[in-house]
Image (cartoon, rainbow, N blue to C red; front, side, top):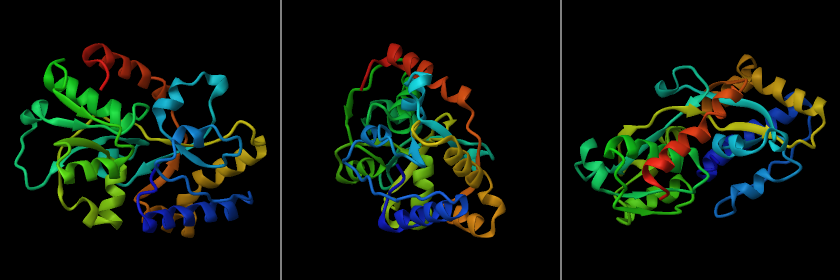
Length: 258
């Protein structure tokens, strides 16, 4: 989900290699780049530590869900020390816009099973437009980079970027978002969590979870976390994820689908 550039991918690789060493669990780091569907990744029976968006996680029956490991805690101010994230509503920097202008703009979205790229901006739009539908929407744009390119090309006026993805780009690829301005930030939601497949042995899952929860206490782990803009990993609050379908349903009733 956060494979945003070769440089950033290398930082994730470093984390997962550290995790394998620290947990004494053999892990193979694999690439799953767009346009390969994330749903195919989440269906794999050999997941050891894989990011999963909270919305599709919450929609699965409890017996069908992958095993939750941890959720990240970002160092950014919007996280407020909690395992939450949000979406930044962004537009071209050279175009003067006020929040009130957004209801009439062309909106881009990523994929319909995304909290940050679909449900969060729709929820924001519903509060902004008083339940009126958007005049024009464009998607699927697949991921934050797709939103950035659509704004840059003029295909859309505005879109939502996962605030943590934006944080990583600000840290490591600032040129990629230099042409954008942040107009607003959506309500927070529980951070995408790291999961393992149900087929993993309980002792494997426990070892991975313990290593991740202790990463901020290990000098090397703490350095890796800092390079990724993270303070620590925390135990995921599953009850918070289970509120996401109701939030999405409320927006469906107000706006319909994009």
